[in-house]
Length: 359
Image (cartoon, rainbow, N blue to C red):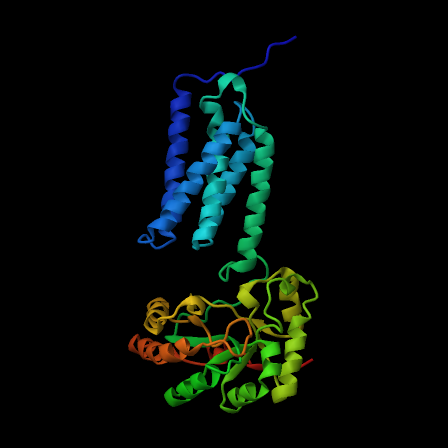
């Protein structure tokens, strides 16, 4: 019987390879942590811990000379994806994938007793490759600035100092009409992306928004977590029908709930001669209770061409208390004007019609 082959690593190659892997890990962590607020120590610790933990686990199961190609693909994929998102959860997942992939690449240059491990590194490599692909799909579907799956407009031209205000998830009995009155008093046009079931529940609010000259947009009928995966996406037409019944017109703007989209959904939007509009300036106002914090976040991030995301409702529930945004809006308007940013309707910012055929 032939003796098992062993991988001969010279006295120079092993330390150099381990050093290179260490440098790559440090560079990845530096890039990942720059994507988040450095003051958020828990987030930094989460990203660092995910990388180290996954690398240690992958190293334990690795055997010399196996799965370096799969590990390399995983590390390269995670390193590329880290530039696409900045939320702590996704960065931690990518750090774990990068650490695991890097460990599979570098394990042959480390210490593995008698070439044995706790499992099949090739299997681990395949699992990590699948995890990178799934994570990439999630990023493509959920990230406004990523356009792999049909994209959507995230900002207007940057050559003029103009921005657009957009409001999601209404109509809402506590906030929508007070917001309209504030906009009217300041001579500002906003765009209200409304949920179909909320339109049917509170049609008078939608009529009032329309009669005051504000713009409207389609934001699905149910605003749930899974209907965007339906290739036919009937949510779009059902909401257009709600607009037709209520105001006799249909908007040309569509915003998918949570920004979730697929190539099939994008095709349905195009077939309706509509424009998918996302955003590039958000304050996460749905879980913030301090109006000054909301205003500060929006104004700090605003720049020429910004499409600003705010919420006059939550998930299409008309009675949710959204008065925090009513208190924040005057501060936002004053802050934007202090930055010499003119607030215009979404149709003027993008130079496209605000209304389309109801189909």
